[in-house]
Image: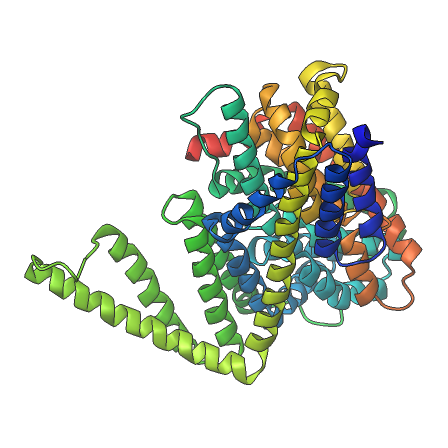
Length: 516
């Protein structure tokens, strides 16, 4: 039995997670139990657990992961301030009179919310409560409507910025450095979050295109499943469309533009996104738009000018021009701060900030606790010889490097039926990625393939998170079986997307290669 403790450990983890016990405690508890079991049986050096403190310190000091709570806060503020509802209502009235138009609008809104919030649960729940009843009243087949809402909501995990891509970037970068060390390279290269954001852009749009083509095709061959809405509400005016779509788009451009343009790190861009979301929500909360506009202009000017003409006021050799610039920067900071304070005050009155901060803390704590527990798990798994076993399995696969990659993609897909994306990313991927990189696979391309695959775990029954979110928000007449049946075609589209990126790697590697 001692020779197979690593495999038994993985099996025990699956049982513990499926039992419903909190995930982070399940992972950490299984790791500790098997560490001492391995020590008693003489197959593990228990002093390896002494590295736990280093892993905790490494996690807490990882600047890359600081972006997670900031992006989560950005999405939570936009969701709690009901900006998503405005988007859904406007797009639904814009496209509703087309056959399949409501489905098209849900996918487009899902893509916009993915790029501005990145929170799958919030997006699925919002669309389940607003768009799904509208689609059902318009005569949509419940299975088709449920599948569209579920799938559009998961786009937040592949279209940047997303927590999945940030976690994946950290895992892939560490694995890439580990692979380089094993190759005898000591001047190692690192991978950045920005590279993975850039790499996921085109595959994300590819998935959106596949969904839209499927909806249009289904509208032709099964028109009874996707009736055109008999719209009782008037079409939105140009001003309504502008006010609903432009603010989130500007926020997306500011955040992603800053990252992809090299102007800001992902953490800095995430802070810009969080402040931008608060200002946008402030307008929704009733603040005079001019106050917010002046604040946005002041902060934008401050960012641009301070980048072009930096001033260090603590130096004693400054010129008169530097003092003038410093005064201008201080004035711009005050104008921006006033706008932020006004927005925060209005949001606090409506309990928007309290709800958003609570949601952010809950999700961030869950993610970081899981990452921390997974670090202990992987430490024990390596101590029991699991790393060598995984490498041996992959190198013995028929078909060489591609055979090993296809096996890993299939294994991750199957695990997605039972495990969450965080668990797969921080437990399994650090074990399989280094051998795959050593076999010659490009880490950026590999990361995008795995990202699309892990994203599919939100849709795969019986434990797909999107399915649970929609079950809680959907009308009573929509059955769980209809929700499960509705996502099956979209799971197929996800697999087609993986196949296209597998066959044409340039879809994921061209943009980061050009930008970085």
